[in-house]
Every structure is written in structure tokens, then in C-alpha cells.
Image 1 (cartoon, helix red, strand yellow):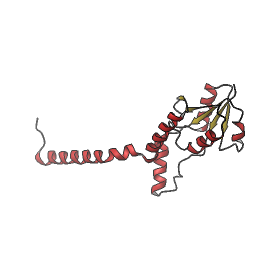
Image 2: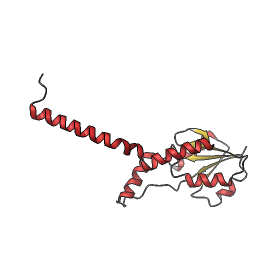
Image 3: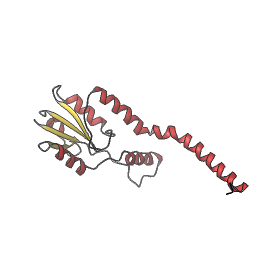
Image 4: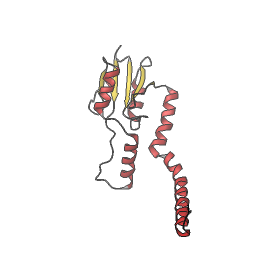
Length: 164
């Protein structure tokens, strides 16, 4: 059985020299995703698939030809959801033969089949992660709680607080 591991090392954070809001947001997204580096993903793939071939699309121009005769294509997501991997994933799913299995091994050592249901779930999770909607939705509650606690502390300080 011929197994090809596809890694896409093109996603990286904006350089620290860029200080604008989009760059800061991009760096925050990158650090929140906590992606593993190429060497880690290559070692993880080799550990799980000793006879498999590792291909990094950032370094190999003919990678689409290499997946043509594979029995299984393993997408190597450096993070949990494959953030930044969408274009490569879409390209592979368009080019593969219907009999080829497409699976995912992510940087958290999770291994799963990439089917239609999983792709829908991943799109939703990527959307939430890309725009940090969970954090944005919780922020007003945290701010209100912080203001209430600050007001409580101020009242305690000015009235002498609770006496033992």
C-alpha cells in the first residue's frame, strides 16, 4: 500500500516588524493555533507510516503528480483543525481518484478519515478559530465582570471593607 503524507509549510505568522492591526491579529491567530513545525510533522508521519513518503507542497512543485498513484493520502495538519491548509486540501480532493482514501493526521496526533461530514465540521471550526468568535463573544461578559469586581473593590476600600 502506497501512502503519501502531504504537509503544507506555507502558512506562517506575519513578521514581528509589521505592527498594524491585521498583522497583530494574524500573529495572535498563529500563536493560538499552536502549529507544529515541519520536522515534528515529518517525524510524526514517519512514526505512524514507516513506509510512507513525506511531501511538503512548499518545497515540491510536482506534488500533484506524486499523489496520483497513492492508495492513501494523509494530510498533515500542523494544528488541530488545519487552519491555513484549506487551499491544499481542496486541491487534493479535486485531483484525487475516488478510490483513494484521504485521511488526516494532525499535530495533536489525532488520525481521522476526511469525509463530507468531517469537512463540514472542520470548516465551522476553522471559521470560529480564524475570527476568534468564541473569544469575541465572551469578551463583553469578562469586561462587565471586571467592572463589577473593580467597583466592589473600590467600595470595600472606601468603606473600610469587611472587618474580622
